[in-house]
Image (cartoon, rainbow, N blue to C red; front, side, top):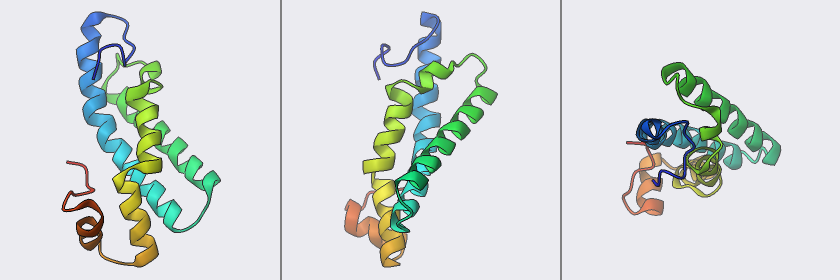
Length: 124
């Protein structure tokens, strides 16, 4: 990730905010994408999916601001935050597998093998 992607008050904060958003939001983003996939599979519509993503973003911020006091909300609004969340919740593998899980009833492991060619949809 380039240092210009995330906005920081000082150069010293760049490394810590990048590490935070590479690790913390990566996992949160995948969790929200799983929920988005369930919403898509259940055919609840765009408004419900938007609400799930919004609540997921709020929860991400709540966690991050609790554990990383120097982090700024504007960082979450950058590419390393909301843009990644939106991409993952609309086109990510976690969303696709969970949508298929709801619509087909097949086990997650079977869907992973079929759709991801052995890659796991779980966050590592």
